[in-house]
Image (cartoon, rainbow over the protein chains, first blue to last red):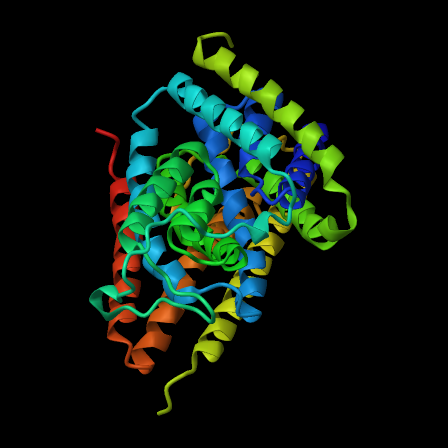
Length: 273
Length: 120
């Protein structure tokens, strides 16, 4: 009972922080379950995949209803994130927890550095600049554009999506860290649309690998239940309060948490338990 | 038969995602409540997933029944979304997106097949 409550509360915190800072909860759930509750890393990843599907499902519905997410683009790219996730899910059962911990440590450092460099949540203003102006065409007759923007560089978008799928499946995250920059900076999709579309893609991506985790005994329902409920509650509250909170202090706190977690994960990778 | 507009499809899928999410959360809440009632800690080990046992677990009101069903709904909701898009695009005569939807479902089906096999 006590452990269940703690797990639920941990899930709430992960969902809350994640949604306040515009990250999925995945980046926090895996460290929470491994460091605080002693779960093997791969099992934590399986539970985390469930949590990211749940949190993305509710918000993806809202984005679609408001017509922010681009369904055609999302579905085209998620074909490739799903293929990446399928491969990643199979690979995850062939590598040791130590390798996964090492990869997770690298991810955490990357996120911490990204957080520190982010000046303002309104970074939305930055222009999708550095992509070469490839002539606009519709591969296979596929019109993916949305109101006010033209999608370009589909090939690079596909490559990025494959990579995002693999990372998602190995580390139990939604993969927005890869997909949003690829869509925004490389494919010329406005940040708001890229974020919403990435969120929509999480479900199919994470389910392609979650199926493998489920069928191979990588998901414990007694852990997944309380954690997923907690993350769902936290993310729901977070998405409704984010605009009322000064995120600067929270971001600094988050970077400290990420740095400490990266250190713990690196220790595991090096063999300390 | 009129082709559904892009907005209609967005709305239908949005509703499907929302309903799927709430149904799965309701099942997980029921499962966790049953865990508490049965004095099960999250750190106790559950038996592995077996679809054939979910029905009997549910009938016996065992926590595993609700939890596994909740997890299956979580995992199946995105595929249901793709299936709904497939129908919408098929009605609209959008053959490219029908193909994309079918391929996504094929990848999901492949992960069921490969996930069921033992890690060689």
